[in-house]
Length: 294
Length: 160
Image 1 (cartoon, rainbow over the protein chains, first blue to last red):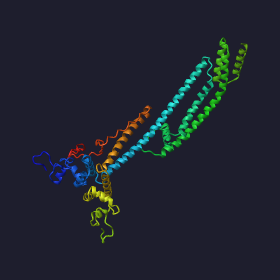
Image 2: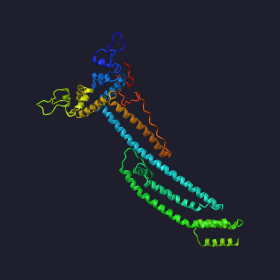
Image 3: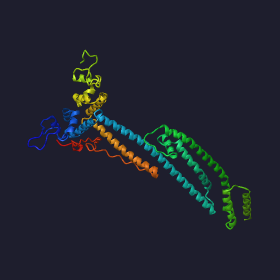
Image 4: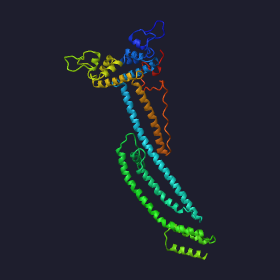
């Protein structure tokens, strides 16, 4: 319905109701003449009188937002006649639940990778220390220098650290699981020994089953290695005693006896490499005699 | 108000409307007399005639769900006359967007760890909440567009 001489036409609400659209029409700003379907939806769900009632109960500054939500609600009801906005809410809840579950899975995997990376870094650091210490000791021995008083502890450290590292590996794996729960350990193990491709569906039974399967065989090699390291340590111990004696001897010798010093160095290296035998005893006696001459 | 010829009491709708509850009353199965507030809310927001028309357009086996959804929307509109149940939709939609962003960032971190063995980046901070009173942060997940009407949500909100 158009006003005579006026440029504005009746709003969709007044057009539908076939009445004159006055300038003070509450619904005119929100239902332009070209949005008949939108108005029909709102009218079908709420009714004009109920919409006006809602608007009149609100402050004029809130009318725009209220009408926006009313139109949206009516359009959704037109699209989903049974569930309307409640269906949209339920769908969003479901989406959130799925996203949270997926986030939990991804965070678990990320934690596994972090621990693995951290352990790798520790191992690299230890290996670097071992190699640098071994280089220092060898270089000192080659130069004929008395190694520091920490030679024995150095060797102790050299042989002991792998034991410690592996001990750390096993303890962090079994005794002190990550902060979350055992499932993280199981997934970490799964990553280390299997090709992981974990996705959304999390099955608590299978990771734990995998953990039980993997931990049992995993512990045995560790025990064997630890035992082997201990044995190696025991075998080295007698050599350490002899090396100390030799080195103290080298310190007290005269510098002019270079040949004998070279010989003693050779003997020392032989002692380090091979077993103590009769040949070494003879050499020891020879050194003693030389010392007595001086 | 109960009829002597019928053993069952009138439904909440007929009680509220003060009319005779007929055997074929469309409201009776879904508005029991023990829940008077349910119909009162629905009637206040939507009106009994609109609800009746809506129920007639829906198959019988889905009418209970339709009534429950209408009751939920009516109660939400009474609690929040401005946004009604659409306010909850907006909040949930923002939550979905935030979670999706975080998940994308975490997946990117995981990818970096898995294939590059690099330390992970920190997840991006969540977007700041919109200032009070701003309507621009209101999310309407379903943009309803009618080709004949060319409805546009942004065009609403004109001055009186």
